Length: 329
Length: 293
Ligand SMILES: Nc1ncnc2c1ncn2[C@@H]1O[C@H](COP(=O)(O)OP(=O)(O)O)[C@@H](O)[C@H]1O
Ligand SMILES: [Mg+2]
Image (tube, rainbow over the protein chains, first blue to last red):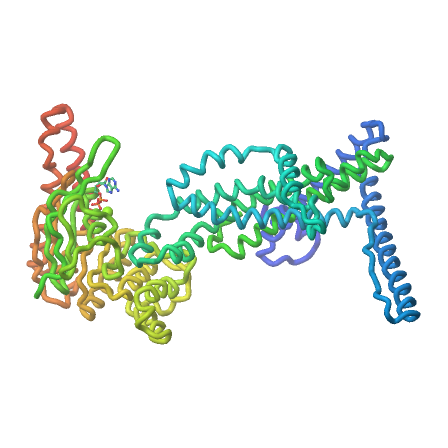
């Protein structure tokens, strides 16, 4: 690799300081190779796409997908414009009415346009975060309790093991029915569909966190537990000062796994239940069956993947920030 | 001087899948206020078990431990422990590790400023002032052990229990730590029980060396009073005939105990292995002596 660097510096006729051979290697590995991989993938994709004929035309290649990204974005902008115009019209009308009759109480009706791709993305993001946070709030205390108490572990472990592998699609009908039965306020503050997606996500991403937290808590170094005993820390202080920090690395491992599960589950649940979100977008396009549909679905697939990746990175960064154990990858 | 700690005829049995395992039988020892006692014995004989019973982390099956006239039933900060592997909380700095202990022990009796001064005083005592805001992951093994000692000292324990505190350190660091410990001991006159497998360390530091027989059912074999004047200087002692006599006495005990295990039953039951056992153990003993030298 050193010779490569030397050759490169000769080639460019620049003086590269000594350390730079390592920099070149790093740049090569971290930038050039991923880029190369990406290019190869794009090439293979467009080559294969050409040869797949579907009932909706040829399978979309990269350029068709990019076109659709563009179209989806301008659709979104147009929709926003319409929305703004809608509210402006209302305000003008209300102002006129108030001017004519000062006793008039102005009313604002909400805009009810079709959700755009961008709207669906934000709906999905909000849903996944809410479902995930709810799961964290339940799973971490539960995991700590299970990790601390052997009897509780024996009691709850079978339930966890049985529910862990359940697919979201199996939960969904039950959740939907239960939510409809129990959540019967006439003017719902939160949409039922949102609750359905959220609870399904929570149910599915609870288990990795419970298991990892419990394993982390049960595996705390006996010496540290002994320190706590010698200091006579109260149960609460023991949990707060010893147990929780000691198991933070494992809790985060569980959280990362869970967030990944949550994102996958959410898309599936949205598709199946036609709840607003990216999953519904995909399903609607599939039902729509226009010549652009496949390219739009492909665009959604890429966005779903990219968001999943960002969520994972985000958790990792949070883990690095919070955890004392710097050896996380 | 008065008896501070009375380890009174303790037996310790551990339940195992193949019936109870008797680790200790009738361990009986009285320790005076301000005394430095070492426990020495072969690995696995039951030294840590004795210490854990005194700490209250284990409950003796028979007999008991009496500290200042009160029976020990659970762990507590008046019997501070320095563990072999420092056992600092890795997410806290040196200062915060000591602080956790100080807050717990003196939270009601000392003001914030007093606690701060007390924490810093104890870290200074073990020469750790310069690195007190570093985390365990950022300091060397010796430094971690110093912080562990500072944490224990900061609890102002009636008895300080140390389980092979320097066992994981290299020889040079260990010598430094022993000197530090002697300095601190000269100043504070703590009552200390220290486990060691290092003969020189035992002779250098102790007022009495308690030699334990091999397990199972280990007990106290011999007790050696070390009457060397303090302060002790390791270099001067090297040529001191009395020092060397003490050393030889401990070595002889350990050697004899290891070459003639106190389990004659086994010899009868399995004569084939009777030959193999001494050969293996004598090799091992030679190594242990080499370690100690
Ligand atoms: N919690 C325990 N359960 C079962 N056996 C134990 C336990 N702790 C120690 N022992 C056994 O007791 C004996 C003495 O152990 P220990 O006190 O750790 O020895 P030492 O510290 O002298 O090396 C060993 O044979 C060990 O296997
Ligand atoms: Mg031990």
